[in-house]
Image 1 (spheres, helix red, strand yellow):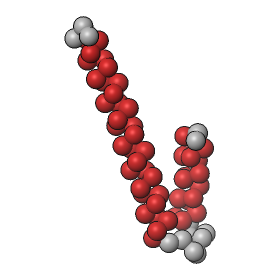
Image 2 (cartoon, helix red, strand yellow; image 1 turned 180 degrees about the horizontal axis):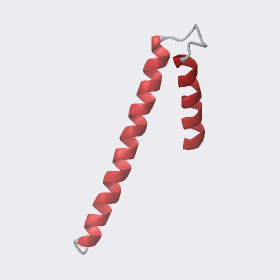
Image 3 (cartoon, helix red, strand yellow; image 1 turned 90 degrees about the vertical axis):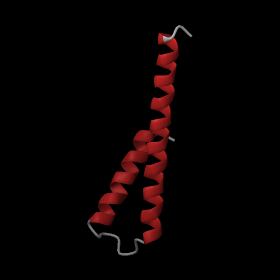
Length: 62
């Protein structure tokens, strides 16, 4: 899935919830949105860690 599309979709939905345009929002939906953000943050951290370890290997002559 395209990350830009997902970000845009989450932003639009968050604005709807924030402005109370959707009276049927639930805590489950908010929990799912929070979980998605946590997973994406974890993936970013893993990617950065992998890149740093790769650079350290190059510096050490590996």
